[in-house]
Length: 361
Ligand code: MRU
Image (cartoon, rainbow, N blue to C red; front, side):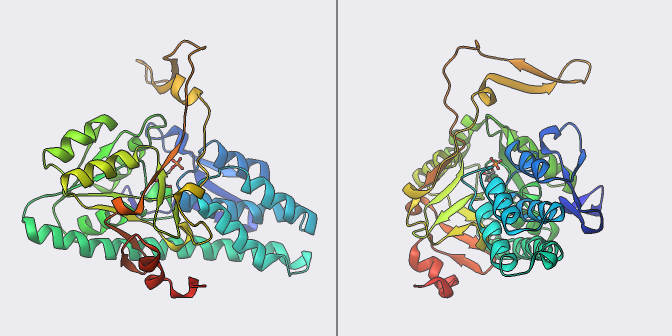
């Protein structure tokens, strides 16, 4: 994706310095600030505190975090410890566990002296594959959008939830990759961006769409229903944090309500995700762990004050009971299709296995 017209990735690796640079997403959309990650503790903090977020970027950051950890000590004990520390940061996005498992398979058989170099190489491969897979998702999604555009012949109105764009991946995004592909191909496209309380990832989506020049409008989460009912949306495209073997989809809380409203109004509901988000070991959505995050994410609102200084505002009495499930599960029957790097398939075991026959037991 372009930032100031320059193709840019969200993560920069510097193996010679044993560090990576990430964008501190907690400071967006008000400031684009790069942060250096130089220790295992800093890598785990970046993921847990959501300086990096979005399933594919969490996976890539964990892979590099492991490489950084092995620069300090590449023993068997350190390898196991670092995988445990990084694996405990966030539970729902399976890309984290997928990336760590892939790193372990490569690194565990090696002698400690060879591990650090191999870890940087494998983390680079994970990052490069993420970019290529997301670009492929964009092209497959573009095919679907072209069909809708032909039917309609007017501006394509896409709705998305959370941020499943460039910022959530190493490049291009998942749900937003078809949007960028459509925009770059000259299709008239506009995006309805839902705010995504309480962490407001919709503001990140609005920010990155603006960077690339894609027309978009931000809405409160609860406005999605009326727009879908009034025919102002041609398709909803979201990302995923984990897709179970039967096609059930865990994604940012609020996704399920959009899928329900799409089903009620005959609007296609697409889920875009790469292989690293598919969990064939997870039979269905009921087996997906849902992250419960700190209640302060509801209690405290962040923004700029009247002088433009970053500020926090308590919007609830401190004793107010709150619940903060960060994800929900959309049943496969509400998903029109899954868009992966291998193509478009029904959200079902058979559909997924048709794209990934090597996963058939
Ligand atoms: O809690 P977050 O911000 O990490 O959640 C992100 C999402 O739910 C995204 O939609 C999902 O990870 C898909 S990312 C391409």
